[in-house]
Length: 215
Ligand code: ADP
Ligand code: ADP
Ligand code: ZN
Image (cartoon, rainbow, N blue to C red; front, side, top):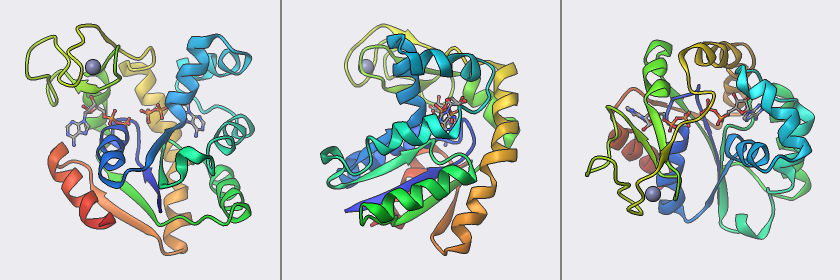
């Protein structure tokens, strides 16, 4: 069993790399952003509460997020382990996670931070899009499908962009990251499980480094 966290600001490559590690380790990616977007799309009460905050690039309340993730961690789908992508994002979330794992006799194996420079993140976020059918991630300049307009993974021709992936919201999200999320790298460094990888390298090089850490 391998349990890990991928940390990094919006655009750092958490989703892209989690998908690679999911295959490599046969574990499951738990993305709180994806869970929230599914709640918004379904029109649930939780989704309605979260939407306004996500639209302006703020952080959804700790209680709501902790409740959502505690329903997933420790379930059958996590039998081989999990990759947390986008969680924890605040110190209280990190503390709640420690407690949740202790209660389930689970432990974290790695916390890996993708270090990047903020300015580059604006371009990454503004060029990001996904296949509507299978969710594969792409980028206008950095990760194009082999054939223009056709998804490599499923052949789908329909793509979408996230409502919050615009230059204005990205700035707010980066600010939230530095204020509220960056302190958790210190939290994990102090317990000795933080590793850092240079997230400015190519997608393939970052994948390679991550594989070296977890193998
Ligand atoms: P996050 O989940 O951390 O917000 P993503 O994995 O969605 O970030 O990546 C953001 C965008 O940048 C995507 O369009 C992706 O294709 C692209 N991308 C990811 N990693 C890199 C990289 N190392 N170099 C260039 N572009 C990247
Ligand atoms: P990114 O690709 O920018 O890292 P995510 O998909 O992880 O974005 O998250 C999108 C939005 O969902 C965030 O801007 C925030 O509003 C909300 N969100 C996701 N995860 C959390 C969390 N753990 N705590 C609070 N808000 C969250
Ligand atoms: Zn697809």
